[in-house]
Length: 188
Image (cartoon, rainbow, N blue to C red; front, side, top):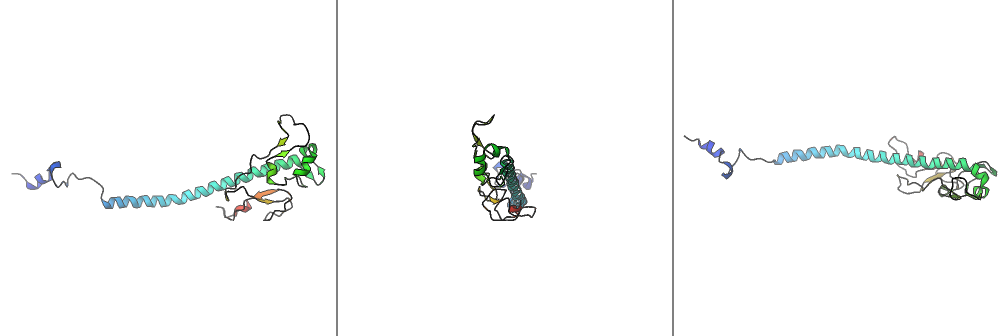
C-alpha cells in the first residue's frame, strides 16, 4: 500500500508544495549577513581615517624636509654676514647676492628658492644658463591644501607666528590641527 505522506513529499517539480526541495535565503539569514557586514565596515572605517591622517603627516614631513634642505643649500651658497660676502656664489655674484638674500644669507622669500639669476657673467661649467634653482616649485601644504606656509626669520623665536619680512630661515604649516602624537603640526 502506498503511503500518502511519502507520495506527497516526492511529487517532484510538478507538485504545488515542495518542502523537501526548496532552497533559498530566509529573511533572518539575510539580516544576519547584513549586520555582520555593517560591523566589519564600522571596524574598518577608523583604520582608513587613521591611515589617511598618517599619509597626510608623512607628506607634511616630506614637504618640510624638502624646503628646509633647499633653504640650507641656498644659505651654504649665498652666505653673508651683513656686508661681508662669504658663500661661493655670493662672492662671484655680488649684485645678485645683495638683491636676493637677507643680511644673514638666507633667501628673502620662498619664491627666491625657485629662481636666482646670477649676475657674475658667464655660466659656470656644466650650467646652461645664468639661473640657479633650489626648488622646482613651492610644495603644497597637505594640511591646508595651499602653497601658503608660515615663515620664520633668522632672528625669530621658534614659536613666533608673525614673519619679520627680512628673510626665510624656516617654514611651518599654518594648520591649527593636532598630530597623532599629540603635538601641533605648526611645531614640526
